[in-house]
Figure 1: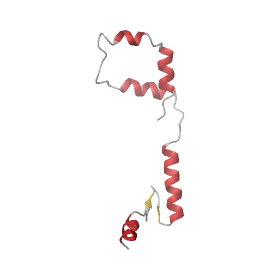
Figure 2: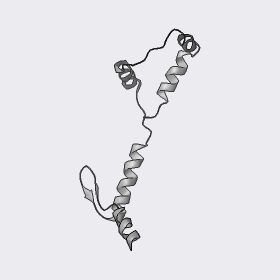
Figure 3: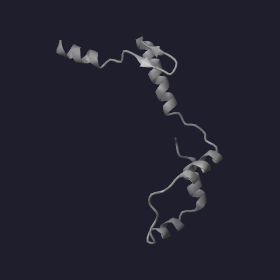
Figure 4: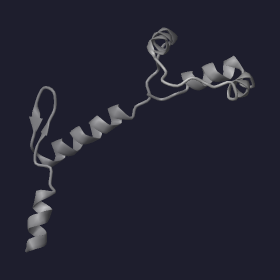
Length: 88
């Protein structure tokens, strides 16, 4: 009996979406699935947006003299490719 009481507290009874609220189990499940599909969906970004974002970044840490030579070994095109392939 106590297990049923705790189990009933773990049930999602309502999901509030931007324009509506859903209460039925099937609708709640659909809304949750849609939310996570959109959340983890890969989106194509254009280079202008990426460059504007990178320009606005302020880095807290800079490389010291000992670390700088390691970066000279990485070609610029590899850095650009890595940034462009990041998922948001």
